[in-house]
Image (tube, rainbow, N blue to C red):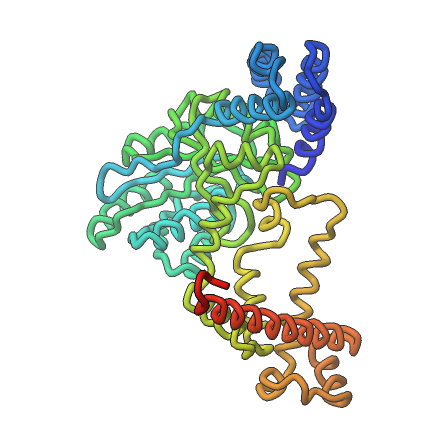
Length: 442
């Protein structure tokens, strides 16, 4: 997500490491590197200028110049200023004051507005709410059909009305939502390739009609400063309540996420980090500042694990592992649980201290898929008792999974190594329980 800016910033910090003390020249050089890193990440020039001035002023203070770990002090200043730039320590929240609550999504065509309407609906559904999606984009061909399909996939109703007049569709949807007791209504409004008067007038009319609790602009992180400029225009006309920044899983350089708050004075509330309907995260400035600086994001990882991983299954697997009863069925289940968390690159990005360079994440993903295919091509008995898998069985499994005999041998070898490790863990556990019964633990 932030590979490019991470590399450049780490170079700036690296030059400070090993310096017993910092001089004004060291700091000015480091600040210049930080400035160039942010500009190359497509952060707004004025935002960069103000940011580096604040960093320089604090970094040239007595506290940093006389610190025993000046490089760490400098990184802390950059991180604190980055957090402040993106919204400080405020927690993301949606201000829904009435029932039903209305969320109006706006933005340019191609920003992912329709998809993120469905993602928001899924987010509320997980919280036990009863959302309704309203297809009010009558300009883009197939926009309404796309929303209907997305609604069906997540089990959320979609109101389409006459499919012709957006204002009439919204008016009818309001009555429909009240009759069927929906508590959240999400409006997917029209987007264009560029802002025009007709589009804005329609949005202003819908705003007056529903008086939405939240007007959120969906912004494509891939288009850089153009997205920030559009955000300013939308905010001037509609008084936005915040943003959903999308496509952060692609080649986005990070400029939008750093600039947009400062330019519009409105917060980022959500970020889209993938194509699946579950790939929506609340935006925490402190956590994203840590990701940008390559420091990981353990809190988000813990939340993701708690949401996606089945606790009972995890405990059951752990007990089987300790008892030496872990077979290939359990192995497959663990892989499926890991893959629920998302791509390996996303998981590792949240873990601090893991080097990203030289790691082929795609290869890791391919290996997991290969293991799944191999185990799925085995019989129930073969999964329970892998030792019965002889040469002819291997040939059949290889053919069924589209893999090679070497791939199957590699998996079975890994499994045998795991079994040996289980025995060692069990021995250590037994020793520990035996020691625990002795006086003073000896």
